[in-house]
Length: 186
Image (cartoon, rainbow, N blue to C red; front, side, top):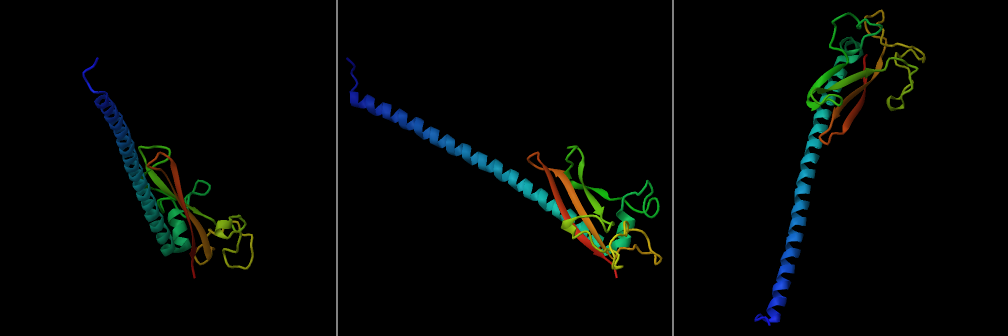
C-alpha cells in the first residue's frame, strides 16, 4: 500500500489540472493580444496610406483648379496622335509618382497619380454629370473642347477631370482612390 493519503493525491491531481487550464487560458489570451497588436499595426499602416493618397490627390486637384482648363491641359494632357499638347516638352504629362506609396505592379517602384481630362461633350460619365455642354455654346456634340480657340484658350469653359492613384496596400491588396473635379474659366 502506498503511504500517501488518497486525499493528497486527489488534491495534487486537481492542482495539475488547474495549472494546465490556467496555462491554456493564459496562452489563448496572449495569442489574442498579439493578434490584436498585429491587426492594429496593419490598420494604422492602411490609414497612413489612405492619408498619403488623399494628400496627393488634394494637392493635384487644387493645382489643377488654380491653373484652369487651358494651363492644366497644356501641363498634363497626354499626347494626342503622338504629339504632346500643345508643343513637345510643355509639361510632365498626366502621370507622376508618389514616393510614399508602393506601385501595384512593381513593389520596388512608387505609386503614381494619373490625371484624366474629359473633353468630349458626348462622353457618358454619370459621376461627372456627362454628357453636358462643356464649351458653353448651348449645344452638345463637340468632340474635343480641349482644342485651342481663337483667344488662345481651350474651348472648354467647364472641364471635368478625374484624378486617381493606385497603390499596393500594407496587406498586399491593390488600393485605388479616385477623385473628380471640375475646372472652370471665365
